[in-house]
Image (tube, rainbow, N blue to C red; front, side):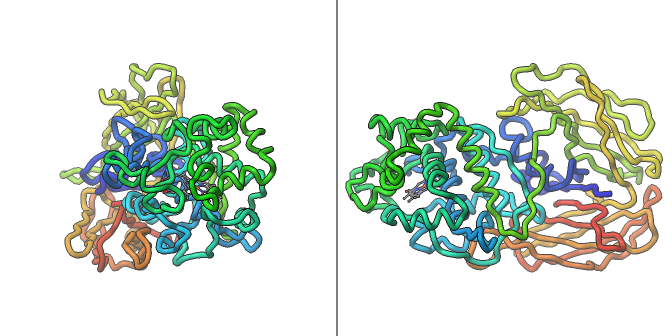
Amino acid sequence: MWSFKRLLALPTILGLLSSAYGAFFYPNTQASLLEHILVDTHGAHSSGFADAITPCTNYVSGNQSMGRTTAAQWIRVAFHDFVTADVASGTGGLDASIGFETLREENSGSAFNDSFTFFRPYVNPVISTADILALSVVMSVGNCGGAQIPFRAGRIDATGGGAFGVPAPETDIPTTLGFFSGAGFNQVDSIGLTACGHTLGSVHHGGFPTVVGPEAVSSDNLAGGIHFDTTVANFDPLVVHEYLNGTGQRGGPLVTSFNVSSRSDLRLYESDNNLTMIALGEQGTGFLNTCVGLLQRMIETVPKSIVLSDVVTPMEVKPINASLDFDSKGNLFFSGYIRILTPTPSSPPSAPAFLTIASTTPIPLTPEPAQGQSIFGTTAFYPFATKVIDAGSFAHFSVTGHGSHITFPVQTSAFVVPSLTSVSSTSTTILNFTVATRSRVAPTVKVQVPVGQQGTLGPAIKTFDNVAVNNTGRKAGYELWAGSVDVGALATGALSVAILDGEGKEVDVGFF
Ligand code: HEM
């Protein structure tokens, strides 16, 4: 059985607590951590990720007066990563290779390094930069007025740059359509995807002086951005209507540029005599669903070896940091939070929930006063802590209340001990850990750490197999085993400690 623990060292990763905590993860580590970023966007226990795009006009990587917007940048970065895919041979797509390609002429502008710098602390042994990039598209669209794009995880980061082939403002139509076609998008798809992308953001004089002239630069628009439509930070159909009607921004600088050869959107939209743009205009707000379909295809264009996970969906009842640990007297304790998500417009619960472990008496849980808010509803957090008398019979726990009774499996054969594990990062990251096992056989331990790498701001994962451990005693029926790793570099995000069984399968994983 898979079960998971997490120890928190980086508030930006889990947003919960700055001290160390471990936890079982549901439905699994990867989905749980990504769901946290997707759902815990504002208020109590937020991950901090959505702060970058709140409000949607925000620019997280520099001065607000630059005239840049982070939500738009994220979508553009994903497009540039995707469009060089070769779907016929099953290579490229959303694989974060764009991080290695920022010096290429076709990737002009600050968006790529801005985005990867912001993404960096969220990347860890189970969350790739490519998954964060895909999630950033989902969150920009969903949080800025668009519809919800289903999100699947499991992308693997490229280890170097990939193919060339991003359309530029001066690229001719056959070449542009050829690039899109290589990535699996026909002419109608390409026009639709471009209109969807160009409902947010701007073309900037800084980066694209052949599209936008220096007159766009002003004291509150230092990069000289001219918006694609009148609602620069709203994911809405306006760009299509303003283009068709000749109103507002009239489709934006790639339609209206002083430089005729830079009018790539105009050429693309006219390439089928505007039939696709007219059809998109007739969809009204249905355009938003068209964009969901196109953008989902974009972020799910991945190398053929990759199998994406099930859709990561908001969990109504979610254990957070549900963890085993020893107290100072050596007792085994189970503690954490239950998060209850109440979809809008219902009111969040005021009645307690109950937690039952094994067959003990249900423990009443009271929510903390501070709640979280997101586009999915309101979250209430119920802390719990209870002594485990008999670890051998503790195979699951249940949460009852608010009309539901949900049981979550746990495994107690081995776990990484939060209170006996610590990470220090000065000139290099040093991990000192303890794992507890019911077996007397020394466990196999694997440590993985995200670290910086040459050529991209996306981290690489460094793996330490078969880390040596020493028996340091017993507590509550468990053998304790301590070990240490000097990473030889600074961790860029959470590192993991995994206990493996005889077949190399993970029995338990802690994140620190
Ligand atoms: C023929 C195809 C395309 C061309 C030639 C093109 C070109 C450009 C250019 C020159 C910019 C200005 C960047 C800057 O000044 O920072 C831009 C911005 C943008 N593009 Fe495209 N683009 C194309 C298609 C797409 C597609 C398919 C998407 C997404 C699905 C997309 C998403 C964006 C976004 C969101 C921005 C705004 C970025 C910001 O405000 O920082 N583009 N595009």
